[in-house]
Amino acid sequence: MIAGEAAIRTLINQANTNLLKHEVFGKIETQYQDYIPLDVDVSPLDNSRTKKEKCSYTYKGHDGFAPMLAYIGSEGHMLNSELRPEAQHCQLGTPEFLQECIELTDSLGISDQVLLRLDSGNDAAGNFYVIHSVYKYIIKHNLRKECLEQWLALAKRVGKATEIREGKMYDTGTTSHRIPGNRADLPTVEIAFEVTERTIDRKGNSLLLPELEVNTYWTNLPDDPEFIIDLYHNHGKSEQFHSELKTDMDVERLPSGSFATNELVLRFSMLSFNALKTIGIDAVSLKAYAPIKMNIKRRRIKSVMQDIIYSACKYVISGGYHKVKFGCDCAWYAVISRLYEKYA
Image (cartoon, rainbow, N blue to C red):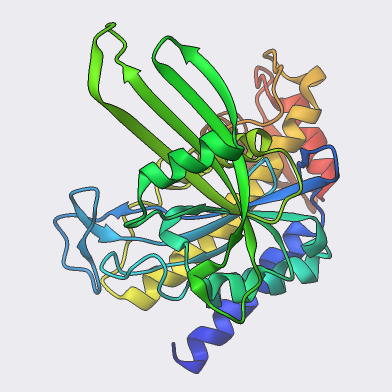
């Protein structure tokens, strides 16, 4: 990255931080502490049938890019973003990206409340050096070539067993003797595990050999393993936020042949994304004035754009005054006017 690009990136991050400082982020409640979720993930952008710089084949079966995106709070405000070539492994550059996220949450004053969640593609020792003393985290452990039978033996020895049905046992528990990447300079970290053993299939047929399914998660949370596993599964909500960016805002097909320009487009989209998120959350707080029932905590960006941003109006200059005039049949006028009073 050249100096000019780095300076623009810093300015955009500062503008985004100033926008997020006014937000009250949705939290996850636990018996020990309430946490603000920080979900970091890669999401491929389909830019097939183009010759854009650094556009390459994705695991989704099309050509495109693979940006790293970070969402803060249960509402899914975007904290940070980085455009990457699809050919780049998801872990390459991630420690630097996480360090940037730490600087951003420090500027928001919330680093001690953050719960970071990462997929198994980012199970790497380099990430633990960055986050271990700063964030609480749940990172899916990549089993790689580990023996599933050893995890089954461990689960039977120290886990909590539950019979889901005849021939299907589910064990959960924790083990604390593991070190990420077997690095001597890293502390031991607990692993929460879930092991499913099937000896009879769903049709009632006995299996010659048991089927094993093992999922494991690095964590420094003190909670029960079942609760930790549920918290990680909630990480899947970030797919909805990806959809809002790519589909609702139509950011998937980036406009330029230049990679640097597309990087800026993605970062500026982050500002628009958060502005629309804020409008949607504030609109829900004004549901008493809305023309529809809203028994929800947040609205999709597509709904915000259709109901509020796309509302027809006329800009008028009369008698030295600048006015925005809405039709008498504008159903969302009561909400729009109150949003304007709040932001103006």
